Image (tube, rainbow, N blue to C red; front, side, top):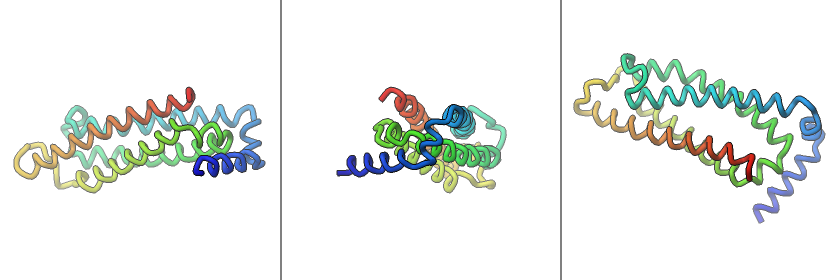
Length: 169
């Protein structure tokens, strides 16, 4: 039943004039794809920096809060650009994206990435905590940071794989 409803929604969306304009334009979809790829690159780069910082491989001379504060705005802007370009791509070809199991898996994984980032932000971004010494409560926070960063890296790898699989499924 869910598939029938989703297919009906896709057909309805495909019949909309805006969808037709996107689909039959020679430049909208390629431009949206280019913008989407650049935004993916920016988002992945800053998330990689956050994860590597939590693991101690990047900017370890700075407090984590400082690194996060520099990366977070770039990620938020990239996320907004991804949302916009992704919507254009979906509206242009809803049946190609929305019913695709790889796309659905990618979206679920992205929710996981965002939840992971919110947990990192709430639990680990504290200007008073540098947790470099490795003693007591700092060691617990450092362990949490490493677990969260490894989880983030694994989720990102899965998002990229699922994103690439959209073209092949």
